[in-house]
Amino acid sequence: MFLSGEMLTAQRLNRLQPDSYNAVGTSNLALSTSEADITGASVTLTTETPGAYYVVTATFAFDITSATTAFASGICQLDGASLIGNARWSGEVTTDFGEASFQWRGAVGAAGSHTFKLRGSMSSGTGIQVLAAFTTLAVTIYEDV
Image (cartoon, rainbow, N blue to C red; front, side, top):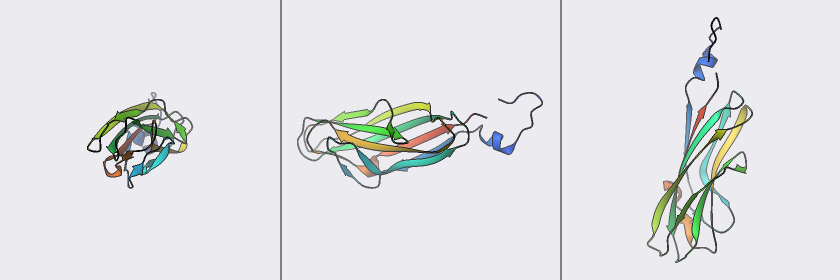
């Protein structure tokens, strides 16, 4: 918000528009019960104001590699901490393939560099992979002027 009589600056005007960032996975990930990074599915950005607001939308592509009754989870982290909520998907036989999406919203905290990254895991055993080329991350940042 600009108050009456305030001097407008290019920097403040630029913050009026949101900034968008995108990433696509680059290497498939065989899931296990331990969370692991999805290579390539991360975004590092710099915010100029404290409390900048983010909206993250992720789509995870899961593929069954061997019959399983486990489910897969897609997680998003901000600066190494998992955001609340995750995408969840399950299949059963080796012909099963599908996508799961989730959206996160919140404030990044302090101004500066921040990293959003996607991770995956499964509830038990093995037999599900993340297909990286179909797994996407979209981050939109809204700054305070």
